[in-house]
Length: 430
Image 1 (cartoon, rainbow, N blue to C red):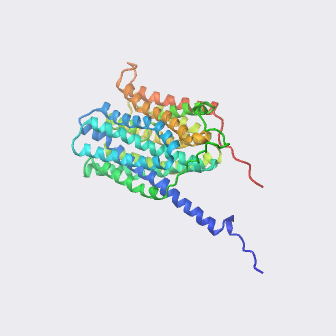
Image 2: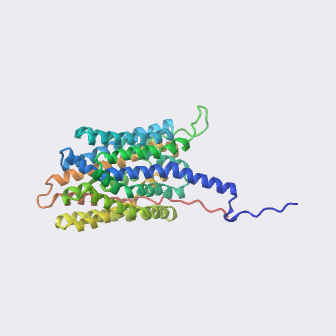
Image 3: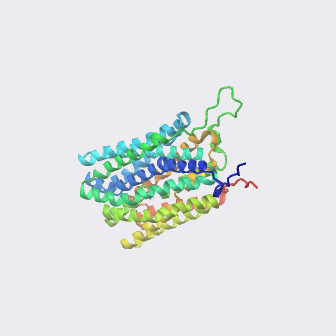
């Protein structure tokens, strides 16, 4: 008579541990590795964009336009992408997005190497914004399809966290490549790295779209666009818009790098070093935020993160109004990046909680349209308010930063008052 084997510690059999390990490897190769490559690419190129704009004979207005057209690409992409991932599945769009990003980067490298026109530069940046949003929207939809509610925060923030690993080395490497080789070099590196990182996804990523209903199915009918009007979804959309108006000035460099370059004369290497420092600080913060969201709730990070973002932007407004030297700007640079790290990924996590299961693609398409419209408005508003004498007795940069501060503080109040906590844990089995 054989004696029953004692179950292994932790309650998992060797087969279960093998499956868990394989799932973790697949998660790294199909989620984290592409995120690292995209973060590295953004770090490589963001610090070079102002200098490339100057080399084409353009000023601060065109430099802001370089970021504006990228955000414009992220605005036009979500709705068609959301429809396509509901219609044809997640995998196709997930793989196509990084390819579009790489092509855009190669084309910009051609402009930089051959003294192309600013119009070409802007057009290729627009294409890059479309590709980045295709990947981001598809990736979040896959997480909503596959992750339990109390793990979504960690999965989404881990995607942003490992993206910071790429951003850690990217800015310094991009600055060195631009100085040592040429302004075209960071863009070639970007394209090659993104394509190489997507190879495992081509091999391992499976389709996660829910199965289609047959014509004679007794299941509930497919959801309609009207479901997006059910509370709290419209309020979530409003908060996403306001939050992205503020943090759109930080993600991907945006107005913060333009401001440092044109207002204080900081070089691409100096700005790249600051961005790398912020990546070092941001990595543990982002992972911690995911744990807090899954352990205590989403609002525990969203409300204070937005409030701190608003206060940091207000501080930057004051530093310019008071004529403080560059050291004070660096303090504000650090503060706004730390605040934005707190809200990195939490609005997407909130979205996965409220998205209608039968129409996640459409939900995230509309959600990202709203959010990216806010990101688009960020450099646009900064450009208008910093180059137009809105108030004759107030410095223009002060007005621009004050506007970004106001949107974050307003969003913080709305979340605190009008949105209930969405982390509802099922009761534990006895």
